[in-house]
Image (cartoon, rainbow, N blue to C red; front, side, top):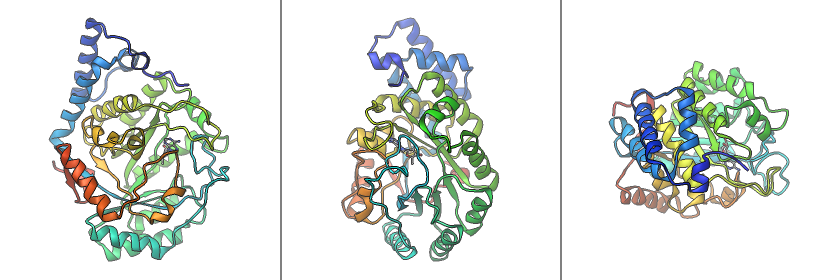
Length: 369
Ligand code: 5AD
């Protein structure tokens, strides 16, 4: 069980005085991008369903000067589901024997990029478990080949914790961005969700290293994970404000039955939207993906996220035969259509929701709005 956002859970009716106070805090966050810790805590403790439309509208407004209604599209390639980590929530953790493990070779990755580029994608997100076989040598070769063939493209990596030297090597080879969710900024919760050989401190060190090296850096967390409290979320919001990442992935925790945390409740759509909207208020210029996990909770979970602050989508352009094997959580929405119809449908849905699909590189730090 988690104990976040109690009034959202119970559907408690809001008191008008409290509603006024919550609206003030939302305004203050929109203006100054941070409020005192006690006020953050008050907001999470007292927010009711009646307050959410004001929160969502404000989050939507805050991104307008920078991004208007643009949604940046990135092509996601899941290059390996081998993982040496034992995260208690993740379906591809090292102890799950029910996973069919795969690793793409260089030619397959380049073929995905070729198809992706032809479809208009300018960013390739290479994502994997922490696979020791993904050596610097292999990755640098892949990165250099992509950059040589498509000099106007961007490469985002999402390969977990690596050494400082490795991050430098990959950056020098041409990688532009790195996504590494901090998962939770609460040491207690981090240790509840991870085995002893995972280090809370090292994960943060990695994020600092990525920023220092010059990557456009992405962090993020899960909402509604087992035993998560409002205090833990306050810490996430403070940490994100302090780190000032360029990207933040926020998604619901979704229970996977092949993990140690089996049998737990998943996070909900509304809870996740609330945290996503708060992150938008704190980081008005960040790239915030409408995550696949939101699409798993609701068919239109991602599209609706565009109205609470999200501005990125990452359609999968990897080989279809491996989609099923990359189940970090269960019932993951799989892009079984051809890449072309997947792109067209994503674009259509974005437009049907009053937004514009943007296939430009969309670098956060140079974006003028
Ligand atoms: N539910 C939701 N998100 C998950 N992730 C991993 N397992 C799960 C799960 N069961 C998220 C983690 C990780 C990202 C790639 O996916 O936050 O950083």
